[in-house]
Amino acid sequence: MEGSKKIRLGISIGDLNGIGCEVALKTFEDSRMLDFCTPVLFASNKTVSHQKQTLNLELSFNGVHNAAKAIEGKINVVNVWKEAPRTEFGKATEEGGKYAIKSLRAAVAALKNNEIDVLVTAPINKNNIQAEDFKFPGHTDYLAKELNGESLMFMVTDELRVGLLTDHIAVKDVANAITTKLIREKVLTMTESLQKDFGVRRPKIAMLGINPHSGDNGTIGEEDDKIMKPVIETLFNEGYLVYGPYSADSFFGSNNHGNFDAILAAYHDQGLIPFKTLSFGKGVNFTAGLSKVRTSPDHGTAYEIAGKCEADESSFKEAVFTAIRIFRNRKEHKELTKNPLKKQRVKRSA
Image (tube, rainbow, N blue to C red):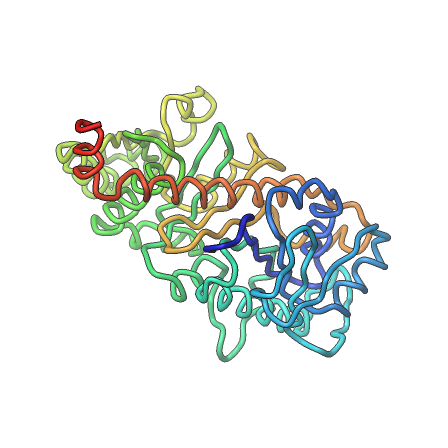
């Protein structure tokens, strides 16, 4: 935001019965985090006070009517609702989903209106958020509708980046969902994200096959030979450094992932099982390809430990740092690519 010294970081509170509020508050219980950004939670003073007291957390916050009024150096809470919703830690309730949606809608509206610079979303329950006016399987699909661009679910750490061709769909539907058009869109989105969000000049991308052993030359399915290989070859000939399809079962175990800037997995578990095995607690879910920056921790609501003050905030903290870093990288990329010919002429005449 123009005129603001620190990045204004919005937080949707997630399922009130999970660990979302806990990990958000624990992150900023460390006052040093306020040196990096101005946090803005979308909930209510009553809700945050209740969570703080239940979890015995030592922090203070500032209630505001809207995100534009947030004060630097403080934890700010936008009062999205006035009532005190019932909290039942560890339970997936209709009310928990209802207020998760309220928080998310308010946060996304503030993001679109430039009242916040970036958004970090706490975990939701994909079942209890469903409503007549909200029929999305998760954050990524909702944000893709609300924000401009082609979304890509991108799991990232400093050492590993894994994107998904398909995300929250049934395994039985994966093969039919993967088309030449989809592969091309995701590769181009990943390439652009690696360049402007992560500063990789010429991204090198590996694609994992759909079938075991990438189909074994058609013995175990024809999708890899008939769909994946031709589009990979076409993209490579166009100048994109995209390789594969690689057999997924040995790709990570052989450390082949270290030879690439990012990996594009065919479906959810194919990418997320190895990612979370290698990076759990450090990983961040980033929605690439959109006009705004959104990240989230790599875990869910964790109902089994909700309300017990046992949740580890490491992944949420990483989500905060990643959102800040990507926002700054985009800003720098925009400056560097703005009228490059003019910049060169000025440099030569100096």
